[in-house]
Length: 161
Image (cartoon, helix red, strand yellow):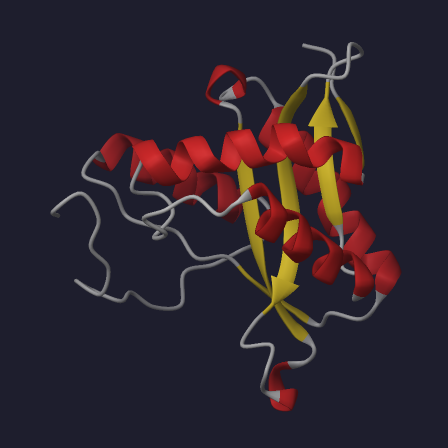
């Protein structure tokens, strides 16, 4: 699959919002229970962009968005964490295991190195009830240099679990 990774634009937010909303409404991988309105989603995109944090999309030549990745402030209201960010990476369900996530992560990490504003990047992973899927996701993060530093057991609930 031919993938182009580029900076997200306001025009992309409809498709990015649709991908994100699907994960909120149908999977436990995001702890939100209600999808944000497109207006609030765009406001968050503008907030991230105004902080010069990377917000990238992967697309095909026809412009269809296959996935996105962005950094956002970790506990942004506390100045002591100003050089730490959390990442979000989500691929369209039809683009999983197609190299889209790797293409996004590679460009994302390179843009962080070039930007210099973030010293520490955090990735939180929701543990699902499928050990094979959990291991696949964990291996993906480890491949990019992330390491497990702790587990928060029974802290989140979604879909009655």
